[in-house]
Amino acid sequence: MTEVLVYVDHVDGAVRKPTLELLTLARRLGDPVAVHLGAGVDTAAPVLAEYGAARVLTADAAEFADYLVAPKVDALKAAYDAVEPAAVLLPSSVEGKEIGARLALRIGSGIITDAVDVEAGDEGPVTTQAVFAAAYTTRSRVSRGTPVITVKPNSAAPETAPVESAVEQLTVGFGESATGTKVVGRTPRESTGRPELTEAAIVVSGGRGVNGAENFHVIEALADSLGAAVGASRAAVDAGWYPHSHQVGQTGKTVSPQLYIAAGISGAIQHRAGMQTSKTIVAVNKDNEAPIFDLVDYGVVGDLFAVVPQLTEEVKARKG
Image 1 (cartoon, rainbow, N blue to C red):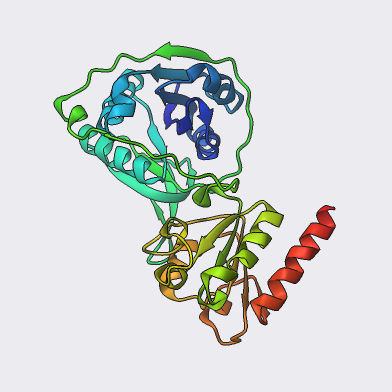
Image 2 (cartoon, rainbow, N blue to C red):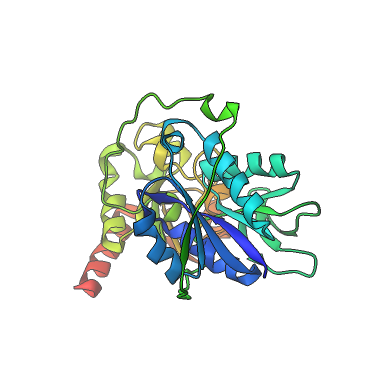
């Protein structure tokens, strides 16, 4: 029986959507084995079973919360030794990529990051990636060892495949490096009620054309009407109009939603690198020669302050 390890991204047992996508992709390669670290496995296990994880390996220790990354690598290595999987899948978050890279080094394998698709091949899993600022698409596979693959959010639609699931305790031994970097404090992020930017199915972003922090409410209103996340271009962030945590681009976050709406964004390569893999792209810009129009599926040449509020009202009317 071919098994595939899936690292579970969760908050106290509340499984995040990228994990459900990973379980869906893992079923193409074999039988998913979920690795749940930290508290909340009783909450997570039924959800993991609904999406095809017949086995859930779990461990809970203070090290997972009190120290950075290394304890989770120790645990994932223990799971790898116990299962001997055909592949290891993790979300392409900052943490996921660091865990994946450290694991690949420990087991002497190759790693592929930021995959947007995974499928079975004759010589192991084959991945699809968007590279060089999404100007090219590549297909790759790991040629040595067990493939470690991180997958971008929104790369697959989660599909249920309910199974009977067994929760198994994972024995983890922590190495010296596990306690090398300690977490000394936490500050809860203020909730906006909007979805997480990198996981959102719809993203509405504003750029230089918004012309001031006081005008970003136009972007936020459209996002709220669509149940979307709010993004911003580097120009808007550098001007202090919106927080850096919302920056989309090469030096910000990479998103790949089902729908991306860019308002007042020219489409410089820095920004395109962060959103070019979006499934459908719509742009609103009053400059009909803006580079963003070379990329979009639908373009509106017009003043965003006239177009975006009308779109917001139309969305609300159709919902109402």
